[in-house]
Image (cartoon, rainbow, N blue to C red; front, side, top):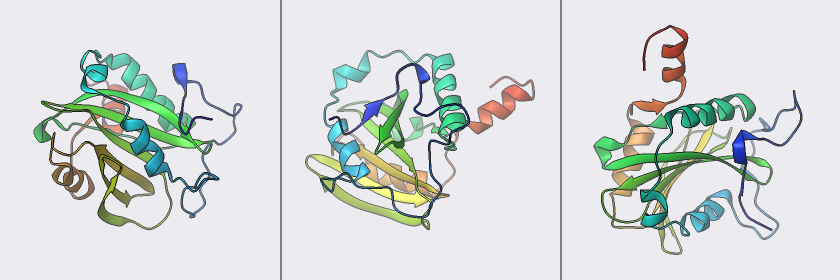
Amino acid sequence: MPLLSSLPGGAHKGGPGEASVTTASAAPPKSPQGVTWVRAAAEYQQMYVRETIASLRVDESETARTVSDIRRDDRLDVRVPDLRAQGLTFKRVQRLRWQDRALVQIVYLPEHGDPVALCLVPDARADQGVAEQRIERMGVLTWRKAQIGYALIGAPGSVDLKAVADALANGPVAPLYGSLMERDREGGRAS
């Protein structure tokens, strides 16, 4: 049984009008084996190598559609951050599932080294600052902010993960895709 499942083509579980994310203030669940969403995402990220992501071309309309689907169907206020200033190039956003809950993976490619992922889940617990851990060979930084749990995951050495996590958790980072882009389009301005 896969730890994470992809939702191809923007499909989602549940019928029309069904909420796919609960709003309880409990932590996201663990699997029966005790695996957390952070560990599952880190193990999934270990499968990526540079060559897997380097050849991907960003399809802006597909990315915007995926972000819109996440916001509408998963009720998760996602903004794809522009991390070029931190040395990371956006490659794709994916809708995944963890324990039948939304898990968003945003993948970036550093100038050198393996891909880095920013993962998000709904998490209504109180905000929490950046915490660092290692899961197998992956560096993992986690935090919670505005009812979203975050995990920045990457192989150590390709980029300063702590600096990127601190910038995301504590500072304004311009979005490439998300609510600002959608507001601009609704207002008739180009994004």
